[in-house]
View 1 (cartoon, rainbow, N blue to C red):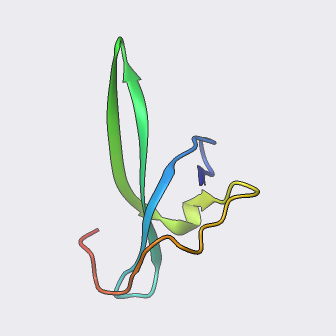
View 2: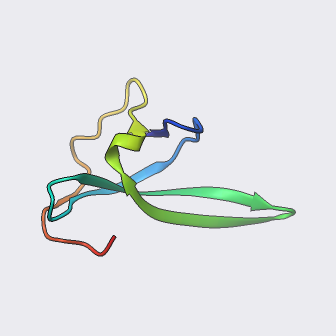
View 3: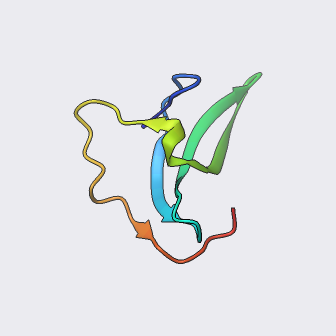
Length: 69
């Protein structure tokens, strides 16, 4: 997946739907701080992401219960 606003590629870990029916994505990426690499993982609205052509996202886990966003 890719974040629409920045173009940053991210790893899609899971989908989840909140109590209002809005889908969110659990994503992760690596960021470099000087000489160290740090992992970042966040939940964000699925609408803020776009698929990478040629990737298959059908097997990404989906959660319907209410996660804490």
